[in-house]
Length: 267
Image 1 (cartoon, rainbow, N blue to C red):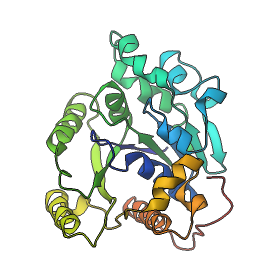
Image 2: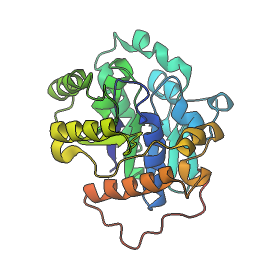
Image 3: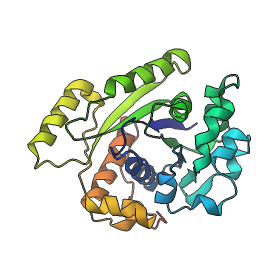
Image 4: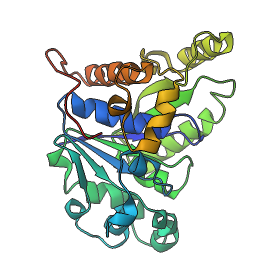
């Protein structure tokens, strides 16, 4: 059965979707079966995977709102990587489902039908503390928190923690924080170094050792519908996310010895 991770931070612009795409693709390249779920109505993870949701009749919205068979909606990107695409209609789910009993369990229930088919499921949450994020946190086993190395890095973390604790207390007792990932890091900047130390002091061993640098190629890759590995495998961004994917699996207690990383992949 898959272990499910919600990539969650209510602040926008922290590299959350970039991390969702490249961590998913990286873990898949290490031979694991991975499903990426785009829970953001903006659909950036969907387009970043090279998928235009307008070309598909059904999306995540139909799975949740209309109880469509989830297996009919999942798009195969590669042999080991699949995508459950988003579309703007996700915005309307709160109004539609707010009066439903146990509405917060809907995504978890839908995912249970395909969980045996994957090793890992990653959910790209919207940058808010709202309805869609609650659905994601209830469906998840653990939370990954991307944090940008900037002055306001820890701003709002208390609200984020409160949300996670509320979900844990009321809907998902097993939810925990797997780790914190520093993004857009520039080690030439003294402020960035200071922020990293503050984050390390706050999160302790939850902070991943691998840090993602600020990298132009990472910013460019989504507009071409490619992961950083296909767009520029030699870039610092690609090397960082490769290392992050390896560290992620090690934290899950998995061995990565003998695993070939770069191969023929579509994304």
